[in-house]
Length: 464
Image (cartoon, rainbow, N blue to C red; front, top):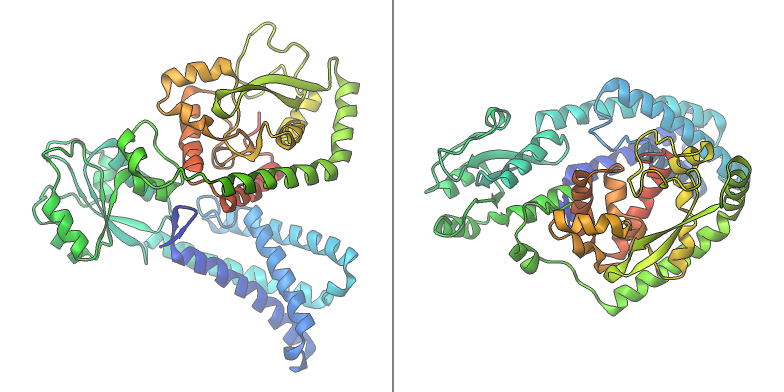
């Protein structure tokens, strides 16, 4: 397992990505070799750079077409359709690049033959890899100690995630009287013997023991877990493992002591300064580059509906200080006159015709770039909510006030990981992701979120 941004990723997934890059590079290279009938180009650095450009653009398009999400691209028809779409977008992107940079152009025949090779190689490669995932080859075996809801959440997440890289070799419940879901019991070996599970773990080739017990006082198998550690097995607390497995916390199932003693929540003046510089640079560049779109949106709103162009509304920011957040108006004027403060719903009849478009592609959020530039918000952070809602959510959701430890963001880990939510349950799930972000905040993570936001915006996902 490779740990990136506080999450564990199977090394095979990293190797898969790199290997596919080699397949793409090799397909173009082979096409050039066949059509050139000469080995002289083997020393042509310019050609290698041209092929490398095609490889990078192609893999970016594969990523934006969800071909690295095996929950989506897990069947031959789905892979084939998305691959054709990705190659089509690759062709358009390269055409634009070639228009502005003619020196990067590669022979048209070579490119066409490369596409044919890619269709065969990548589909075949992915069929083989999906077969490996379904068979569970190279999965890391773990043992779950405990039969708490957290333990079952971990097991269900592993069983339902094809490429998580783990296999639950054994479940040791708190008691032989505990009820265990039939779906879990059907896929998992269960053994109530807690006296010698270390030797069992070694015999099964397990690498980790995940502890998710109901009550540790007087029930904690200290001796066996110590044996596991000295034998080289990694022993992890359940909430810690779940965090690394999913990229989120479980606010309804974690103890305050775990939050207190776990890693993270590190704040330094340097990190704060760099994040502020990041906000100023990115928001300034985006305001300049997107100024034509901002102007066009202003005109369309003014021409198609009555009321002001901009919509200002109170939000709760860092340290629970209220501020006015700005958006393009996407609803009719005085939309809440009849209903009062409510979350937007699917097919909300208060949304205007232009509003549906600008909400779908998050254009209505762009005026918040000014709020970022002024320091009220950050580019990345928990999405700001209104005090009307936060007052209620604080009463119902544990640790909710912790999301106010950082500036609210134009985008965030919850926004790129979870669809739009309009219920308390959705608010809990978003807080699971927000707390993970606050706990593991870094500039690198901000950049990853911004890249994933581009993907979300381009495909208009999760908007209402």
